[in-house]
Image (cartoon, rainbow, N blue to C red; front, side, top):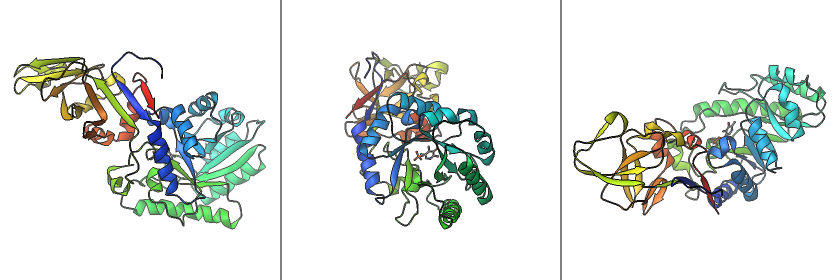
Length: 373
Ligand SMILES: *Cc1c(COP(=O)(O)O)cnc(C)c1O
């Protein structure tokens, strides 16, 4: 942990991530491996420490979104297989090959460009099938077989995986999910019939994994939000094991405590008026930390009491209404537990009309990360 002076910090329990992964693995058939998704700085938790922890806990694979993220992990000494889930430029495939980074085939047109590149080492390709999300992926069986033909006849190209991604795996209603699953299964069965199945067949993110059954012919799951201890969506709360616990907490301290008279206003734009004489605390976190202005009106915890964020959230600071006078530098819990009370990232995300994935990714590099084992 590098030294820091500010009062605001995120605390990440690597032990909790390890336990979450062990719980997820225990729920999967033995032949199914886990890919730990550490894109976007591991959803704000820190890509390198999380990658190390995930591998130690039993994950066999890592995934990221960008070539830059994969190269950074290699430079830090992570040698496990890494898949880049998003498309990279065809001209960049040699960089991936040299670092033994697996890449995604996002379309047939992309592959037709990629085969023109000269490679000197093996390039592991995972062919993405678009089964309904319409983000990236090949569109049909014809495209799949055309792609396999190109891969097979190109030096150093290796057909290592086939996968798809669900658009609605986090919804309790399964009709769209089932359509996508069945579409993917038809591709898998065709490959099986022709004895051309690659080593890795994967389709489930966290939401899909909560639905995984022993019969599914897949041998890898791509886990993100679940290993950080959060449910994929509100609807999935009922499917969560109580063993899965959030790994990230966010804390600060009151840097000023004062009494404000009834009728006085708080912060930019005077959007809040004290309804009576009120105790107001100042907390050194703001939108430059990724603590969005839309969180005005949400609550944080002080001494086990929920305290409303009053007035506009500024770039570096915000104000909260306290139930009574508390000492300067009293701990403020923004995410996590305080005494017997708890605030989850999901509850906060509701205030931003968003999801906890976004809230966590927004926590900026200015917030120090403190790791506990
Ligand atoms: C981000 C991502 C995942 C992980 O999703 P979670 O919902 O966090 O489990 C899996 N697969 C792909 C293709 C992704 O982009």
